[in-house]
Length: 404
Image 1 (spheres, rainbow, N blue to C red):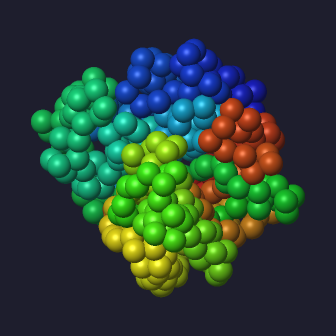
Image 2: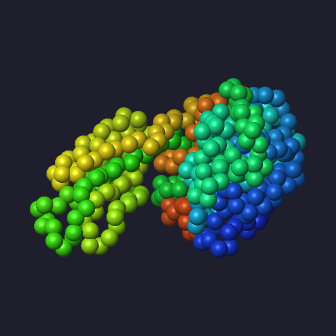
Image 3: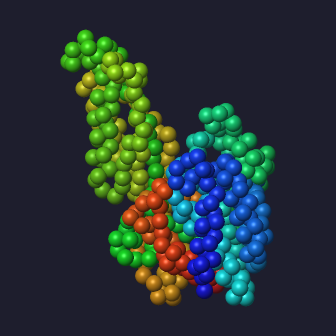
């Protein structure tokens, strides 16, 4: 049985490793609180009977018994600025508790079981997320290692500070077929489970994410002497495009957001000459992403043309939608039914390390409710009962997969 008190004690202890000068429960990757928290976590893993190592990418990996291919579970322990206590840690500490329960039962697993605290899942100053899982999937290249933060430090140097060895980064990659399955327990970060009064969610798939940069170039003029009809206002053109993003995201199976805008020269008495907006499209439907990008480009071009403003759209990144493995989803269903609990099937609107792990074998995710649908904020909360239910479902799923 899951020891709920022990699980909550771990959560409270991990939460103490935070930046005292930042809001919420901030524990960003490559910071002293993050490093200290992982030293603590490594000891907790050893206490649970896991053999612990840090790989060349700085991932913290604990393993126990069995043979390959391995069953793998885990998540991340870094946070966004002002983040909460559950996004990531629920999956790591839930996995650790599952291992303790399996070990104390005396059950011998057929497969090796690995628990991973992936390095740096959240966005960071190097402009790349899911650093550790990218490395394990073989997707972290030399160009990534040369990325620099605002202070000029390279990602390579930061990984070395985290206990990795960037000179041997290729050794962090696992071979395809090395895993029997990967399962990640995570908070939903949305309201669906709570609204339905259901304790567990089986994730059907994870959204694809397309990020775009639209640049509008007009003409700087005096804001007091230039008639309205003679202006080439880049900001007004961008504003129309921004509203188009909202309209496009409100239609069909997806969402769209303009999360950043910059206007130059940025003076009250100057008509804006150059404006950039950063747009993000998310959907589990790749065709939806393609169609919305095309319609955004058309709307932005029309907004620019109407004002004599030049417009250019660049694709910054594209992550394809991911469907969860039927093998893993079926194991989850049997496990949850065996526990006598209810569940919903729902997509994930957020990206996760699971996306990278899909390159290596079957993957799936279990969701537990987020109070008020809140996440990435200090108010992020999941009840002890729901965390315990998620951990029990994770353990039962791993046992189902081990029997295959």
